[in-house]
Length: 203
Image (cartoon, rainbow, N blue to C red; front, side, top):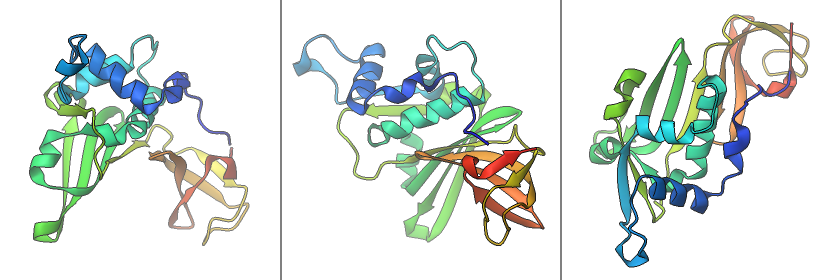
């Protein structure tokens, strides 16, 4: 099984400095005089997605993966003020696609030795603040996606995925991207494992 087709992969080639500069410029954060450029700019997740979607025909699962890849490429320059106020560490921001789009943010809260998860449905993206910073942060977030549109499809393992053997028929649960990686979450013989797209043959 090949990697899913994404019609929006054109965004992948944009370098981090160019991406951040483009976003800040498009958000009207500069005055044309470098000495007056603000060190950061706050927008909303909805506005950011619309900017990344300029020229894109379909805002589908492939586009959501492109959004996550683009943000991962600029991760050191992208922050969520809510997360910063909460003081979370090891933050993962995931776009979930399960009939509807939502953002789920998880992270560790060191003072309480706990983990915190927050969720926003797509209708609330206009209220999710995103801060774009010119200076990189030392602890960037990880951006991910989890796409359930493949749920229920069947495939055969081309290679062993312990404890599952090669040749095992499995059921797809989701397609996941984590940072720059991509994998399928599959279930077989009562076990759930992660498998690279090239190690599956769709039935």
